[in-house]
Amino acid sequence: MAALRFSASDPQKFSGKRTDCAILPVGSKLKLDDAGKALAKESAGVMDAALKSGEFSGNVGQTLLVHCPGPAARILMVGVGEGKLERSDYLKISSALARALLASKASDAQMHLGTLKVSGGDWEWFCQRIATDLVYHGYRYALTLSKPKAPPALSRFVLLSDDAAMTRQAKSALNRGAQAGAGINLARELADTPANYCTPEHLAKEARKLARGNDKASCKVLNEKAMAELGMHSLLSVTAGTATPAKLIVLEYKGGKRGNAPHVLVGKGITFDSGGISLKPGAKMDEMKFDMGGAASVLGTMQAVMDMALPLNVVAIIAAAENMPSGTATKPGDVVTSMAGITIEILNTDAEGRLVLCDALTYAERFKPASVVDIATLTGACVVALGSHASGLYANNEDLAEQLLEAGTTSHDRAWRMPLWDDYQKQLDSNFADLGNIGGPGGGSVTAACFLSRFATKYNWAHLDIAGSAWDSAPKGATGRPVGLLTQYLCDRAAGG
Ligand code: BES
Ligand code: MN
Ligand code: ZN
Image 1 (cartoon, rainbow, N blue to C red):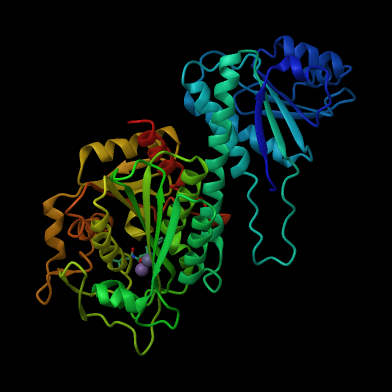
Image 2: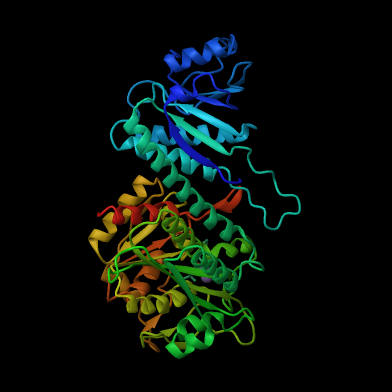
């Protein structure tokens, strides 16, 4: 989708003016409000016929698109049911509207608020949601297709409301929603990109590009030599089997006051996870190109935060490497020393995410952070536990956990709290090192998080296991999660929460 512009306005300014598509919320009693009646009149019977046909029930999320002779070339009716709507209803309405509108050839649209009453702060939330959905559903993967699908035609969306205060709020909410949507789509595109294109260097390029576009941002990329000097031998053990160089990418955004402690996001950036010597089975191994989904979500969030010009200091750290078997690869049983000085027995080279993250978490200490959140497609066990609906959330601080859970609810990019009890920590004991890198068959997502917790001791820390939430298997594609959650979390911090 080319640039999609959003605005909000008084309906008077648009009444009787030509549009490719007028959008009208209609309740299940099919009674039209004033805006609806005016549209029905202009449509010369088309709308009345459609309503009489029985094809449209007005139930939440149902849509019907009709072509008309009037100044509105199309009218898209969107069912909003009857009575009080829950947030889940608004989510259905927003995504149905976005899908139906983008499936048409309309290049501009005007949405009448009409009978769709959203009370209090929910109004802004709903506007934001509509914009995010319109941008989200406009995503088309194109990079490696010789004949990419045409992007949607929509380039302008206007929300019409006769309440001046609401119109003002709607404008900024629509823009924020679009910025969040663009961040989500950046994450999707990076995670969808095949591993022979999306290498650690490719991620570094994307980070540098983001830094170039914002004068409050800067980017530093550490190569393997610099990492070795820092003692990051855990991270380096993962890249030992591949010819593709690993990178530690540090992208800093200083939108806040000088000296204010930054929020740090740490992303797992395994651009391909073959498992290494502990080779994965062949089926679905292609999907391990998205093992940099955490890194992608960090970059998507950084883009959104910078586009929103949030008054916050934010640091992104991405541990980017490829996990491959070869004669130089790390072997099961090898012991390495991490940057923190903790020795690790690598019992399974497929548990590589925690090996790159632990050094990145130690590196994060130098920023004296307000919070550190790491995001990782860390364990298949998390997919077993939570499926794809929730990211697994672990935290060593209750407030941080609450803030992330709440941001997940608001953005409908939800997380579910998991335990970090000492009882699980024992599973990481090793006879030959301070820690083993796997914790046995039970509680695989928990023991992976326990491993990370040993390195996140100097700050408030949370970990999101996104192995299930970041990827859709059918149709195959990245979801862009948890950019929605992270962006909301940082917006909330910027608002003083
Ligand atoms: N990247 C995988 C986790 C994963 C699996 C993500 C499926 C998405 C879908 C991770 O590096 C991994 O291989 N984890 C192992 C850990 C095990 C060896 C302790 C796993 O989950 O099997
Ligand atoms: Mn693995
Ligand atoms: Zn992995």
